[in-house]
Length: 154
Image 1 (cartoon, rainbow, N blue to C red):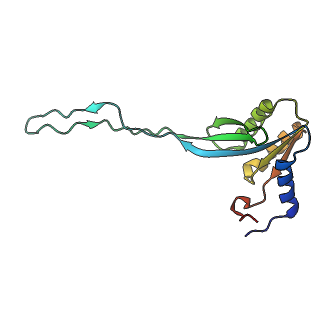
Image 2 (cartoon, rainbow, N blue to C red; image 1 turned 120 degrees about the horizontal axis):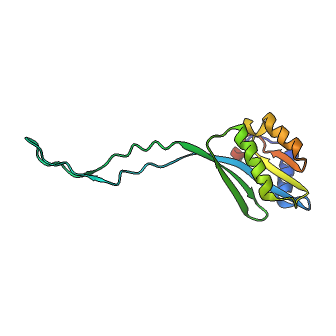
Image 3 (cartoon, rainbow, N blue to C red; image 1 turned 60 degrees about the vertical axis):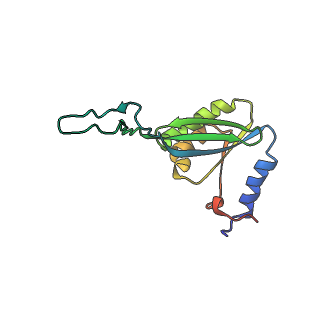
């Protein structure tokens, strides 16, 4: 078991169980990479007999579908059960900040505070994210303790 600070644990528990009045608690993360699935071709190829060659078996056209990959960024509001997702071509700081701006529009102007619970990925702690938080003073980032996902429950 990896110990965590009791203060951090209490803060996360308090945000989930008794959030401050007129605030929104969001869990933010990226899911991915997601890659498009390749399916076999749709046309049946018939191998016709030729000179000195018997007819072959009918088979399907090969599909070499390299379709790329992408990331899906998501926000979940546990209190209301609402979710918001947006796809991006990569897991970059610019895409993360764009996602934060989209989530800010999704949340709306009503809350007096937005608590964003995020993990310790370097993208989540980049300078552009700090600039976003300075431009949006209602946003407060709460970082999960390192290795929190691997902790054994008490």
